[in-house]
Image (cartoon, rainbow, N blue to C red; front, side):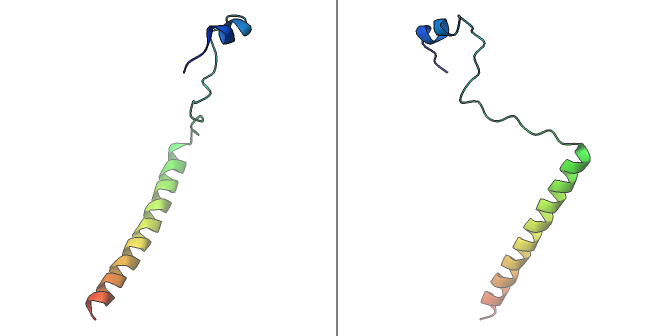
Length: 62
């Protein structure tokens, strides 16, 4: 992050300026909630992969 000398002086020479490009703060969740979310995502992925597998199998049968 670049800051001009004039910009720093205009803010009273405060060097503790927030980074305007900083990423948003991460949300902290309890371990049980993280596991629940991970399992939900994995189940959705498995359903998608099973659908792809069925489509590939039916295409191979042609």
